[in-house]
Length: 75
Image (cartoon, rainbow, N blue to C red; front, side, top):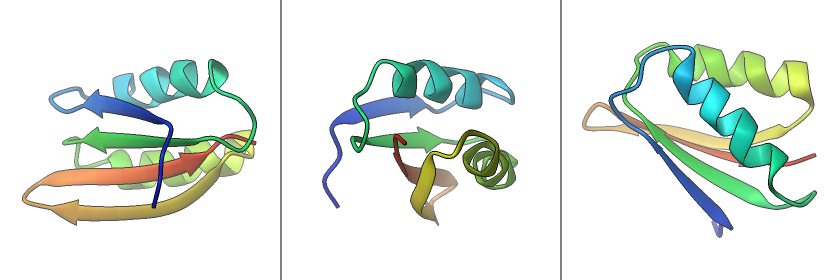
């Protein structure tokens, strides 16, 4: 899937990946997609809750070699 912006949140612990994603999404246009790569094991739960609270769509998430990748579309 295409994305317009990339956020490297590897090595950051909660709540920093969410805070950085929130800031990045605020700078994007409606409908644009942000890719986030994180290593925090709680990030799946955190990004699911963040999507519900903010109305931004969590389009996809996956894990590979201890890295979590998320695609979020700005509302």
